[in-house]
Amino acid sequence: MTASAPATATPLTVLTSATPPATPTPRATGTVTAGPGRPPALVVVAHGSRDRRAVSTVRALLARVRALRPGLAVHLGHIELNAPLLPDTLAALGDGPAVLVPLLLSHGHHAERDIPGMAATSPARTRVAAPLGPHPLLAQALHDRLTEAGWPARAPRNGAVVLASAGSRAPRSTADTARTAALLAARLGVPVVPAYASAAKPTVPDAIRALTARGHRRIAVASNFTAPGRFATECAAAAPWIASAPLGTHPAMAHLLLHRYDQARRSGSGMKRRAAATL
Image 1 (cartoon, rainbow, N blue to C red):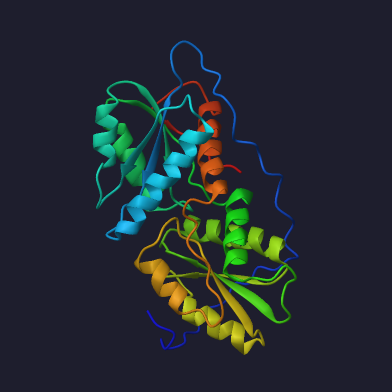
Image 2 (image 1 turned 90 degrees about the vertical axis):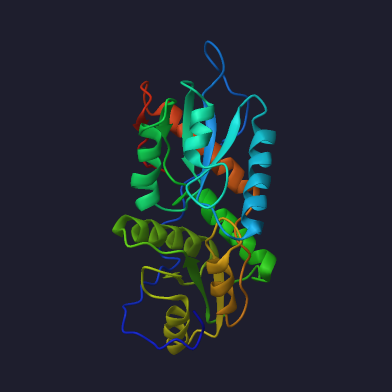
């Protein structure tokens, strides 16, 4: 994908600062208060990538999680492409309890089908948490990454942001991304347009062209990706001004993983079930 891709007539969804402000950020740190035995293990479920930087980034993020919650067993499992694969991680846990937290930024096929399916066939007693987005902590991380890339403290005149995401055919995924865009727009005070690297419209170049046609001249690309990879690189290359780095090991990401873990543990007493997706 390049900036020279032909324009389409796909409607442009713009989220502005008129969107209600984000809800208060929950606390996700502290010592686990376990009952008999240890608390359920946290299994972070990453997609997997052919980019070696992605694997090292995810492992560094898990190190942050362990530092925040020293008494918690934290494991990694991939959906595809990288070891350890999720079924292998779950098999190693035997019949012990575990909470699976998808390192994914919206609902979609992986969160709704693949991960629960792998959990259902494992010997472990599992609960699947909601994906990380949408959530105010995710918007905080996106804002910080833009600031690191050069976004000014005062919103630029004629400024706008394209929220670049992987994309999915699942309507719930695009709705989640739109909500994340709204949370980010409320923080930045400028329009934020969701756009996608694949499977959904508009593309990042299309969104940039549409914003330019509306008079925006300072257009940034916010990388709504968990780690470096092909999609993140291609979307950043389309930026006419600045592009933020992927979310990576931002501290808010570690807190958000623990928040989803805690949320899933509170959702009910039974295992082998899926947690409700809430902020």
